[in-house]
Amino acid sequence: NGGVGYGTGTAHAYSAAGTAGQTLTSAGAASPVWITKPVVTVLTTGAAATYTIPAGCTTVKVTAVGPGGAGGGSATARGTGGSGGGTAIKWLTGVPPGNTLTYTVGTATGTATAVSSGTQVITTISGGSGTAGTSTVFAASGTAGPAGGAATGGDINVAGQQGGDSFGTSTTAATNASGTGGSSLFGLGGAGVAFTATAGRNASGYGGGGGGGQTATVGAATFGLLIFEAY
Image (cartoon, rainbow, N blue to C red; front, top):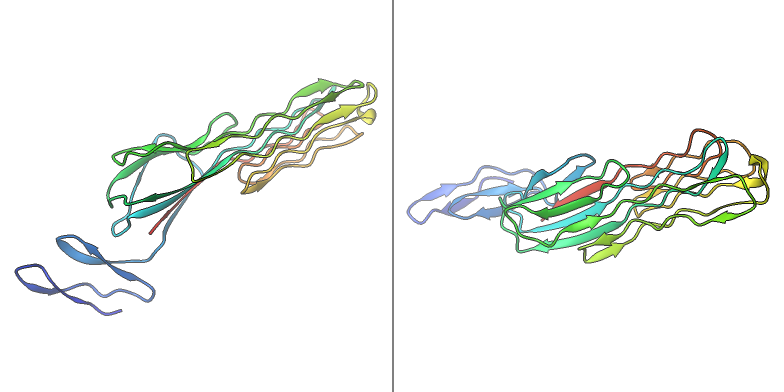
């Protein structure tokens, strides 16, 4: 935990003292620095914002989760569940400290959570948005839920879960059922409602789709999420 002696090439010097659990990392010609790794940054907002790779770190794990879609439905219609957001996970290696990445966190259905090149050139990493549920006037029929959000650019790409189907056997709320919202790797979809004039349930976590409802209030989706873990 104490300071460490090092040579500058022309003189001998001592680093600052670190604290328990830190790692001493070279800063090139400058004084070595103490780093607590991983350096974790958790983001739930941001549009065309900048992330800077921390000093002493050359690997960054990126986890991008897209937002979910709201549930469908109304006072006169059943709804499918909204689908879950996609999740892309990527390990960026050999990245110089101080280089930057550009990111957007999806805070509304239709906007992906994405990381793209700044001064550090990369292939875009994207957790796609889920899709809002579909409303179908009470009837003897069935309606398929929307596909989950896509995921691209990761070493691991997991699409969001499809929104649950809705169906009915006649023309009243008591004879129709709405679908459950789709989940993401970081969030759960809201429950749908069946055979009653009730609001759909809200999603939880990050990237979950809202449950379909059978009133003017449908299940709300949850926002996306972005995590940088630098080593």
